[in-house]
Length: 166
Length: 278
Image (tube, rainbow over all chains, first blue to last red):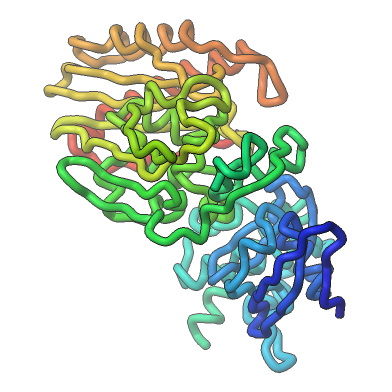
């Protein structure tokens, strides 16, 4: 795993806790958070879709809140707790959100899925029983070009039910 | 610090407008000064008849604030900006300082008595929002000056406001938007403020539309007259969001809807003024 992810002249030391594990790296100030996760931490589950703050494929949680990691610099996450899709499963067991996306066929190509699952994580943490309207609002920043969203709504409802029962 | 770095330096607030502009090479500052780690810049409080928002208060914090609900139009605006992810990062101060012609806050706040508190090397000053926004991407801020606080007077009893935008999808800027603030005495409009967004280089005050309502009993006829006056005040460009004529037509519909919501809110009703999606 590369310890230095800098190619330019200026390097800044940052410490970011990703999925419960501390990562200390030297980065260029202009490095995006998503580049940090993918290239400096080798966590390639976070995807880059549009790279223009539209599609939400790069969504991760920063201190529990969904953010588009293509629209933040890595240095801005210094000291923060980041959760990526790799951080959802625990001890080889799928997170209830991951399980529900699989059980409900809430994905086809899967490119948008990591971002959608993290937006779901923030939603269900704040609101364990969201209405369909609330689900729509919560994932409005995540674009899926395959599914038509219906199975994604079902997956999120199922995840909410399963997490409440857990 | 910005003074030391010179003209090539720029402040970075929530970054949800600026970082996309950097990627498109529409902005290429030599230095960015990140405001995100400064404590005490994010707050919502009520003091002497006004709500005060720290410049770095996120849209999501305003959306979820019970205090901000005292002025319903603020909730309309905060909860309708882009999507959850953008609202978690974007800030009210950054939105005003960026002065994007399609930005939501300037349009919603210009119908209220809004003052922008600024701080620079030569000290602090307050600027009324109508004097703060000068042009597209241009404000009254000096290069080394920043926004510290946004102060919004709570409208008197019998007032109601609404902010409604029409969007092609959540993450994009609206195709057009309308903000309305009314002071009502029964069915009669005592005072009106109407602003149009995304149909000019800045938010446009539709003064003729306001005149069409002031002192009148509000009914379908007077509301339609105001909406027509708003159509004339709009100065849209044809672009990927629609033709100029289409946007003028949107303005008519949005102004009507916003007036109707504002009227009912002035009468004490609790109404969700949701944005409209294509």
